[in-house]
Image (tube, rainbow, N blue to C red; front, side, top):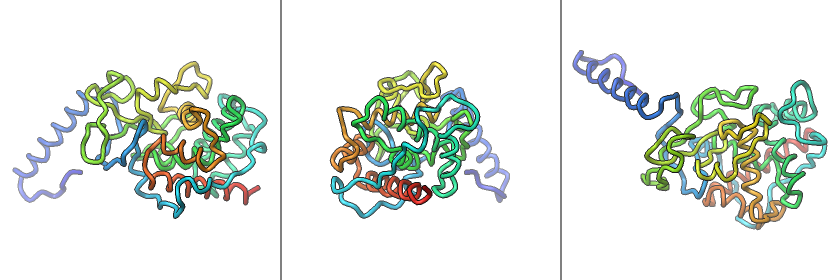
Length: 276
């Protein structure tokens, strides 16, 4: 944020100098276009929260007391659909719910597909697309953080990179684990992509949901499936109150965070149920 209409040329020169320094630092440190905004990140475990969380109200619900509303997703599609083109049941479902839920259709496709995949591989987990949508809203506003738009290929128009996890107030300290491969930072780690994975966590849970032969944390199909698998780890049953809250707290160990995900997931599921 630069000042405008400076009163003196000296002040203008100072601003220009600072801008040059900032641009130089970004070019040297990133080698690419990043989205890095100053933010206070809530305490997290493996995945860092982002600014969109501040826009969401926490639901007034006690942890471990109840799960969000559930909706039968058997009507979405008979099998995972990511990687297919044209009109399919998953796309039609996502386009129908995009307006009522306020979630971009392309993001809904990713969340729905992730549930379908996990339902086929880990049926006892009880993963819901609505829970993934709640997390996606908080972490990156469904791939739209920092002014990004979500393309039909599932990639944000600008790579989504979180704040440096350098131990600053409210931020966990995590030394670099990927040599900047995913986050462009060789000093410390940063959460990446629409679901905000720490690079080391992404390595463990990397998924190829769009069937292009590689797992990309910036690609929302891949990221949503990885998040679903992560939530279902250790035999969790997200259909139970204890399992659901445990899963969400593994994503971010914060009661307000869990309450926000709950409120969003519950609202998305109820809206979908009302739309039939």
